[in-house]
Amino acid sequence: MVSQLLGPGLTRAVEILVAADGLVVSTPVYKAGPSGLFTSFFQILDNDLLIGKPVVLAATAGSSRHALVIDAQMRPLFAYLRTLVAPTSIFAASEDWSSSELGSRIDRAAFELVLLVESGFAGKIKDESWQSYQHGYGSAGGTELGIDLDTDLMRLATGGSRVDRG
Image 1 (cartoon, rainbow, N blue to C red):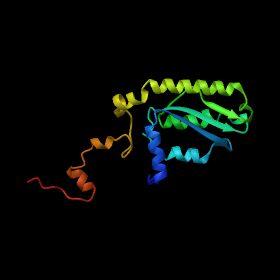
Image 2 (image 1 turned 90 degrees about the horizontal axis):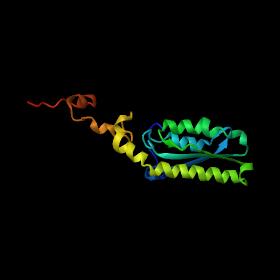
Image 3 (image 1 turned 30 degrees about the vertical axis):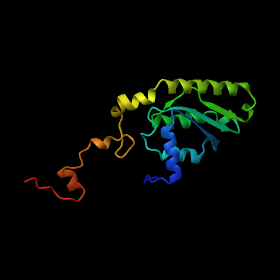
Image 4 (image 1 turned 135 degrees about the vertical axis):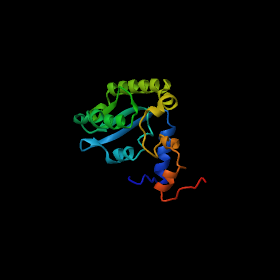
């Protein structure tokens, strides 16, 4: 995670996320939280990768006692990633699979996602206010392109020497 070096499979998964207009992210709940694989995947992503991306959150569990996992653990993660999370999330416990209410929640969340995608919010963020976000060096924000690396100070900082402009 520290090196940010991703294998080809993970690189392809990240490319798919970037190309998507919106996301439906779902995880089974294990031990009162999202699965470790789910959490690890989103933790290795560049902080700027999903800014403004519309997202629907979903989770499944064996019991309705875990219904707050979406709001208590998933929603904060996607807020940190600066996504645009739909108001309706989808949680399904074992007893929900045959209920009509689950279908209604899915329809409502899908409708909200479509509206968020059609609004063009993510594109407007990147086109009109991208620079107002704080980005890390080397991130998907690309702000390092505004740094002049061809200066005496930068050459000295990297072990080079000053250029005599004589």
